[in-house]
Image (cartoon, rainbow, N blue to C red; front, side):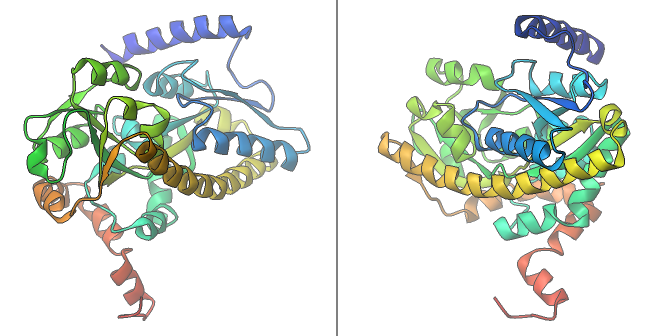
Length: 343
């Protein structure tokens, strides 16, 4: 489907959705920002958005507010990004995977085993590397506001546990429609199969795919554990969520409004990280209690299986960015601080 046709479809869907909500427009109304996303209200990212809205109201003394439409009420991630570009929604949350079609640099996050641990991951996101990636979105009329934690993606299967990449051979595994994600899952021996999130539960039930990959809170909250009882924490990619805003709406904010928004967003990031850690631990405990077999595999064979995927990026256009990311890993970062050998 062409971009023009997708946009027309998104606009039509948005019109019907808004009619059912009793709204006449989702364009920014004064300082009332319309935020739409696809997650449910129990998700830690949604709760962080609610927190951001509350803080924005407090900081501005009621002069700014956020109206949130969860559960895909106004469209899919792709549709919301297109509506955001023309200013028909103010803000949305997307996976960095969904932004690969808008910014080539966003492919960085889909490179398997790019980060050595959570500290390295956040060191990169909070660095000029992370900010620079947000800035690339201005070329497509989008203002990047910040990153929310989305943990690491791991495999869950309906028919058998995954202990090594060999166990994935011939298995159909749902992935997001990202060339990098598809290449990674294929390199691990599976047959990568793009399917929309909303259709995945049924696809797992009916055997259209034998597995999928996602983080613990999404696996639990989606109830995919009801049919996919094997969860292997191989953590092959760490893909953050992005809070993004229509450039058109952002540029119409006053300097004071912009400052309030940035502060509310920064505070919500800290709040969301705490919520995410709690939600991840809780999700693992609850799926285990529901009879899921949680596997903690040796990651070395998985890293070995995808080394050619990473090698392709290391000799391509993203090579300079990858080197900057590697410079921020534990050993290299300590060396720059004169702390070689210290842990």
